[in-house]
Length: 192
Picture 1 (cartoon, one colour):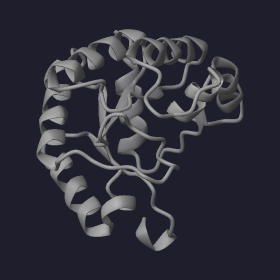
Picture 2: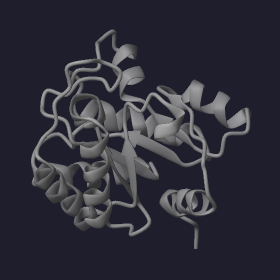
Picture 3: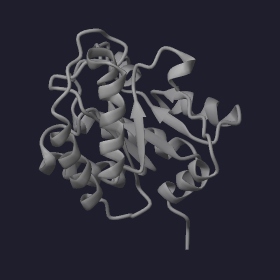
Picture 4: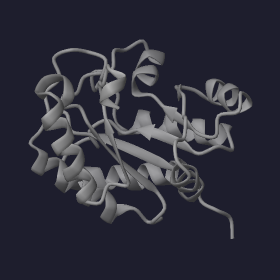
């Protein structure tokens, strides 16, 4: 039986650190693969920029998942994809998981930002209550058909709310079952 993209990514991350450069198209993904990277990460910022748009929630599930699918088709390494906030409530998050899984990616991340979301590099972000994100994480886990499809819960709480809230959220999302947690916006090595 062929190993799924999620299973290949799990093998990488279970072994320790996995470096996955941001890419927004198949060419960049191929270059990263040729340079020896064992995974790539489809960036929402880069994807939006390729449309000439800012990363502020202007692209939807259809555009983002289509781009993720093109990248996954271009390379043999696992692709991690940005799925913004999951594009709505828990039911929408479940649909997003199914769409992204069918695109051929190994993993997707969902963010705990308020809609409309903002690029992680921008100021002015705000986050939903942690309880809402926990429900989204649980919905994502329940929706996946491949148990190896990796669900990444990203918190953007560090910039607006500080270290303690970001760490509390990361712990809560992990306890809810997220395979990986991602604290966005860390600026100092000591915070890693």
